[in-house]
Image 1 (spheres, helix red, strand yellow):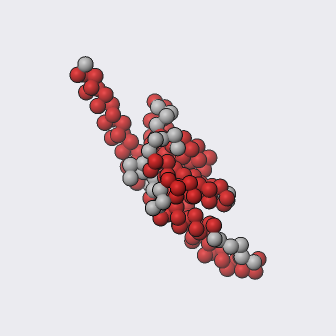
Image 2: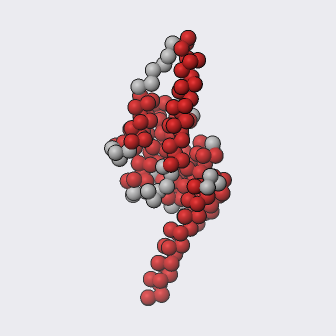
Image 3: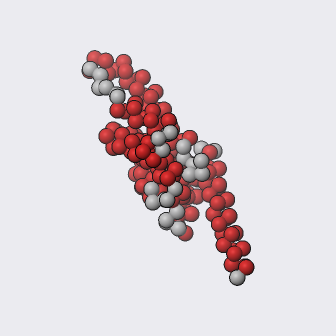
Length: 165
């Protein structure tokens, strides 16, 4: 009976430390290796919300918005409210990248409902909500300014990806 406890503890530690491998790849901007790692974790357990989140974050950085969306949606099954909030935020980023402003706003709002202190979600929500459509003659001037703001909105996924923070 005691050996089962050690085995269960070892397996739990292996999962935690194994996930660090994905984090290490991600932090080194080795997004393909990170995604491959998370997909290998998911082969053993498709219901691992942290691995789904890591897979989504890695796919997002690689520009694979469909896989990112699926990973973030699957990570919403977690009972961890912080992970759910991060997934909502990153779904907002994913929809923003796909030019779906209303959907992005809805996910940023949901992220804020789960975590009202989330400054990035608040910034992105307010940025999109109060963004006015400029007249056609001003669009070219403001396009460059908006592109720099878009980079901030889309970039946030990079710093917010870890389910452990």
